Image (cartoon, rainbow, N blue to C red; front, side, top):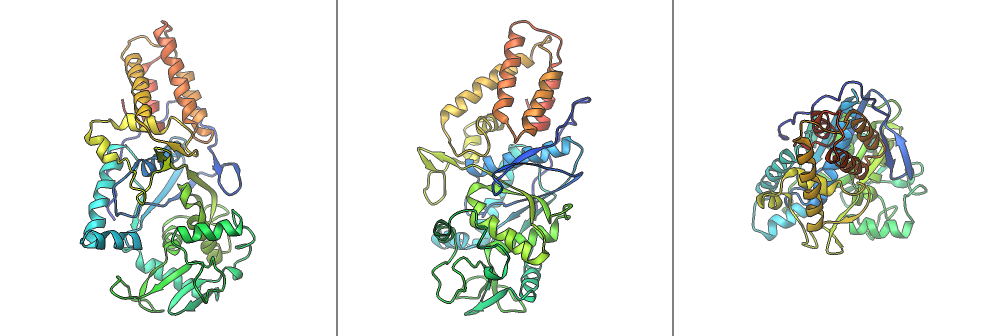
Length: 410
């Protein structure tokens, strides 16, 4: 699958120390070190039935910070992102709009590529659609069947969670909550005949006029979670003690999607799927979560059409901690514009306050669970010192650091 053009990332400033990156692990409930010279990152991509909204942007910009920091630290990064280019919501939207689902998916993917390019997000090493990965997914389902941990129900194939150690006992939330969220996010806990209400679907047997693929176990298409399990395991190098280093995405994927993806991988490999599971908070509007179902979306493409610069969008989204649920507002853009104007004014001077120490503090802040609000505090403080006449720095060191670590080009 075509991704988007690479973005130039300046090398780290000589002499800067790069502390070990720490990220908050959503399941462990604490920060963990991202260790090793090789990092493998899997990020869940979009289902392309609508264009990129601010919730999407917040997620992909967050983990672009991770990618950038690891690369600036001299690490080898393998980064894979998927596209769920066959799924019920996509088919339903195409039917509603009397449009071919393939054409709808491609049109929205093209918008997504444009948005990622404009925002300066580094492209993945592999950008994998479900359709082009179908052979890998079918092979993974075959491997799961061979473990004896699956079962068939009216042609559909499920993973039997009771045969996966700790699957039910270690749920990240209470069982009643898990059942409710599982149903809200595509699961079928009430289906008669399932061995456990939370058993995830591995393969959906052909039904009606839905698209289908040939497989040794019958015509159909894959369940949501096994798609990501297969793409990650087949396209990323193993971490030292887990299958991959980091599984990442929006917090709405924490359960059931990431939990089930990891369970399936562990059932196949016998080891923990990821060393860290990190999630970006939800972006809301007018007091509600921003979502397609609510119709309260703010699109990156619309903001760009209005003349809002990518730098402003980034500063606005980075104004709070990445993991917090927060509201989008025009006030965020106004505040971002004030900081940007102040930065541009300071950077235009020939004499500026010392910069090397500021860059080091910026790096320290990002290494500490992507503390972007601290970065902006440091920048405002540096601007104030420059405005008050302090000298001894190089404006180029600040502008390059912003480009390297935040992807903000001034």
